[in-house]
Length: 271
Length: 346
Image (cartoon, rainbow over all chains, first blue to last red):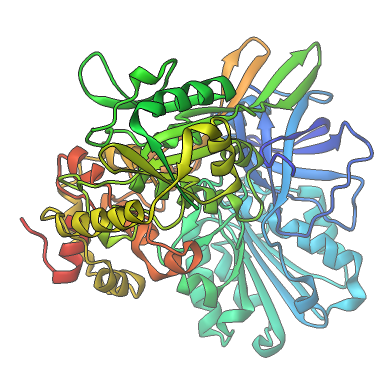
């Protein structure tokens, strides 16, 4: 029996600034033979030794296994310590945990991604997986918003998605800064720019709780079925294996039964 | 298998168990109260005692439980599990607490099983002492966890006056008896009958505390407890977390690194869902920021049909400890009664 709390050691192969308070860390297992398979939407428990561990979504795609990445905002003690680490420094990894997005259910469907701020990383894993198998899916639409242009993550990739002919991409910011020529407004304001076919589309929504609530209501009003709206929930997941109870909602555990739920399931959760 | 051991021989059995492993038993502290502690001699064990304030779950889920050793060597780190393989005998544990341990073990066995916990529980032999006199605040009769046990023990002792009846229920129980086999004899038919009479008598002598889980379960499971009632009850909760600390079935924990300068011990630290920081996220978002939501969570976990289906039992063993520690009276029987009646006692 494996010790569920024993982390693997990984080193930071690359550290990239995304915004003034957010960085992407590329992780490389010290044991090069380590078998690490994951699905988009799964998360890992990342240890900063001496500070403990915390859950972070895997932001890279399983279709690009050479670069395991997570994107982390500087928020508390552990993320402060993580942001002080640089290339070559070691961290611990447990996982992958959680259910992840159901890729099979998405095949052949139109896909709508709606992300707000730091909600893009978990969807980025799925987006790249979809784009790497582009012919298996229908229309792909990505709507992304952040507070300011500075707060947009993966800026180079956003340009890449904007240029692609096989992706419809729109971006907005709540508050423009000098030089911003794009849309200004909250994420749902982008809905009027695109055409949906709710009956054949799966919508993936991730962002701050208030944004998720507003977007879901908007999608329902536009004819999406509850089980076609999929989100990934954030909770303070300490153990990752459904034992510590931090992330329990009713008898469901976000770390084990989620973090990916459709809206029909989210509605059934008893806080 | 029912055996018997003369009372004058129990000390010799305990001496044998002390040679075979660590023995944890109820002892009287210097202040006069009873607590579970590792013993070094048989005389320390108390036999006629009100249950300890703290349940012996500490043996399996210590308050601070070292699970991983982390060592930094230069730029590199090494991690290794901290393995506890001590053979332990938990002696004279009360029925409710034996049930509590079985509850925790069932939870930890669920996939993915927790190897650190199971190593300890696999090496733990539970030798319980049936309660011939129910304790004043106990309501184990409502939770099927006493006064006598039908399961959840390795060996169960019953005080028959001159001797103890010893019911052995598992290979671990057999091994504990085998440490001093010659001290045991087969129980007589009369002794087995006497045990049954003692159980019947004990069942008739419960105090006033009762806990009607069924109707509360129906309301909690179907979200039919009005928010206003949770709010009213939670006004009385002082958020001390005492109920979780003394509860034999509470196991919420956090994970922390303790230590400094390149040597750390990653510990599982027991926590409580009644603390506001339990669900606080680094972003500042707290899904259970309100006390009423935390109280609702505690009782949903313990009493809902959803958890009953998963755990095969309510998350309460009727020990009555929460009644003793709760200054706000929001203990299990009071909350269950309020939910059943739709009204807080005020």
